[in-house]
Length: 73
View 1 (tube, rainbow, N blue to C red):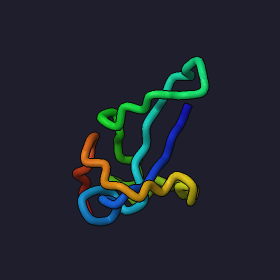
View 2 (cartoon, one colour):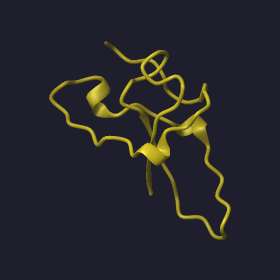
View 3 (cartoon, rainbow, N blue to C red):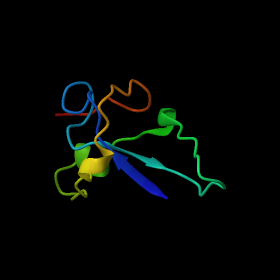
């Protein structure tokens, strides 16, 4: 499962367009998300790539300090 998200580090410490996490389907109603697995989309590194826009409901109102944050401007 593909989980794109933005957080309070987006555009400051991490790529402004958000980061991604790949998840495996989990059983039950509560899932565990390991933000250490967050990575930048290809478009953070190469303008020839197009990336999907992160949906508004995936805009987290916290800083996610985990995962890949560095990128080239």
